[in-house]
Length: 79
Image (cartoon, rainbow, N blue to C red):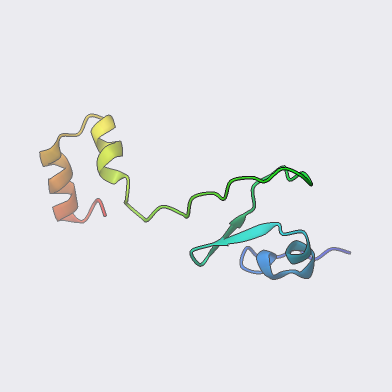
């Protein structure tokens, strides 16, 4: 039988370690790029984005003004 692993356990399981299923990006385990072939080197993915890092750009694309975004930041609605 195969165990059902929690997300925190999966990168540490011997099978996943042997197959290099996960990679560590700045202390955050993420699935490794796939598919993997013997002679193909895949680019290392970017590290995870910071929480709220894209909030201003996304809200701007949704039509919110700079003043609206500043107000939302002041009220704690946007990080």
